[in-house]
Amino acid sequence: MTRQQARLFAIVSTALVVVAFAGMTVDSHRRFPELTNESKLTPQVIAGKNVWHENNCTNCHTLLGEGAYYAPDLTKIALQRGSEYLKAFMRDPSKFYDEQKVRRVMPKQNLSEQEISDLIAFLDWIGRIDNQGWPPRPILVSGAAIPGTDIVRGERAPQVTGAATSNEPIALGQAVFNATPPGCYACHSISPGVNLAGPSLADLATRAEQTLKDPAYRGKARDVAGYIREAIVDPNAHIVPGPAYSADNRSFMPGSFGKDLSPEQLDHLVAYLESLK
Image (cartoon, rainbow, N blue to C red; front, side, top):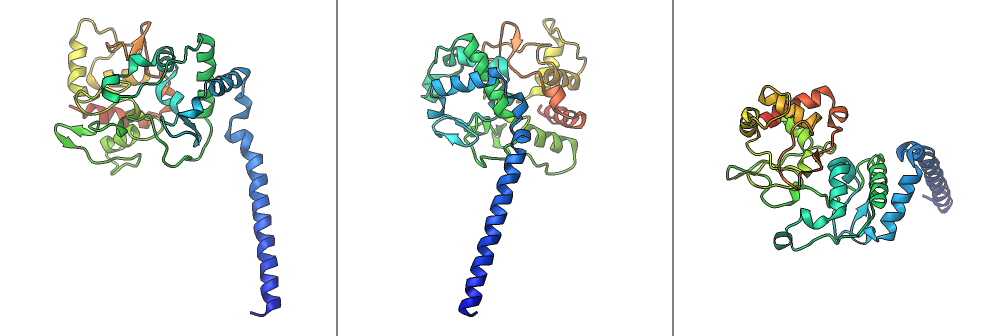
């Protein structure tokens, strides 16, 4: 290549890169309103953002990959845990931690009820942003990060991601359980006695049979599959005992999964959970 050809190559290459970069920038700005749900950026969401900054939440947590990596990423927390759980947690985080075990407790911020509602609205708006999988490996509020949550009957269960290993309903349901959303694994373990934000689902089918026979049961299910389905789509039909699972007779489990999951996903998830005996 002659000097003139090298100069021409450099000029053309630089021009192509500039055009490509400019095109991607313009396209990104064109899609920002759609990807960020800009139309739902309400005054309450903005007030919640102010609560987030005024209380220096970013000094410990991350959102969309930004912030300190001392505490879990909260990008999808509103979708994973639901507003009832977050309200109770923000009012007094110490009720959800055993300081002797975890040696780390989120400080109580003494937020007002309005500030808590605003902050949840902000986190809900953040959670619905199409971040296209970013950040790739956040520190999640996840049962999978706690040792022992994947041990069933003394044996460690195979590591499962959101991809199904076969087309069998149970395998497909296990993939739904480990996918985000819905992020079931973030609140429930499948190991006996390992309770996270929600109770352990080990031996769920066996315990469901016992619950259905209990006179205290107030739901409408008639069999194990029906009980599991009811617990997913209407978690307030039967409140699982435990101060960390409910408040004011309202379950902390989000009641949106009946709408968020497709009928096929729901069938598969029920099949998987029914297999936990």
